[in-house]
Image (cartoon, rainbow, N blue to C red; front, side, top):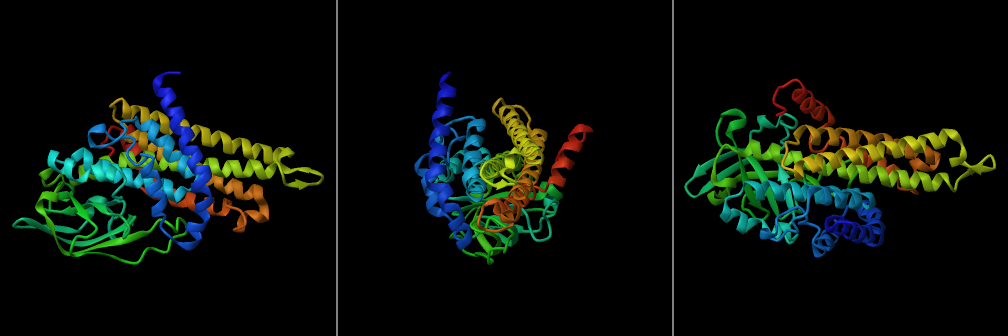
Length: 381
């Protein structure tokens, strides 16, 4: 094997051992207790897994995104909320690092890459979700600060993250009037609502971020330039969608693993249910969908690693992988029959988690819009 292949194999083995020994056994407990697993994030950081795709000059490993996404998939296979959290942390870190001034990059990025600080991303608002360009949070220059006022919604890690990438309006010029800010959790004027009571991923808090005339220092305007926030937001989402695709593949693989194991043990009519063609074909379809989704996100990741445009490919990967995960987890519940709808087995949790993945980082309807616009020659944005 090549050095890169050897490195990937060693990384995969490391993460698979971590997932099996520490992450999977803890997932159900954290979910039932609605407790954020900060200690598990710290374990990811201790193994340098929070900085895989970032350059060594900020403390990263400099690995391809294809390698990083394999890690996200494996973590999600054991504990999907944690895998999604790693993806969101990377999205925010990349958004800051790729667009920061040299001074901001040196000041704010290394502790995110090292996992000493947990990142979050704040774009959506109560009145602007898919229509992100309609956001109304204001940032008004006042001497050496920008005063930020407004409410951001659906913030993953809201209330537990250390650093937030926040989009706010600095002018009335539509999407061109949006700027990006680096806001730390201890920022005066910043507070959080109670976490949303979601269908799943209870250990991953999703909360509104409230800015009440918060005096954010002007040197935290990302890139030192107003009006670039919408471009930052959408470019970050391209990478985030690949992360969610990898999460979905990991989740689908977990559901497939559980269904195959159960089908090989459960007996009816004097034989295991997996020996019946109806169940066997169901498992075959689950496996095919999962493998196809894995191949698609890896193709998109390679395009990114090679420096090519990958907006459409990221949207395709997110769309296909999360829809496939929804169908695969539904089928896994069916294989388990009555036991599948009880909390005695994890497949009911997998089903609920798959639905969330169809919505985060842009609903799958938005992915179809991005793809169709690219096909017809219109801007995918």
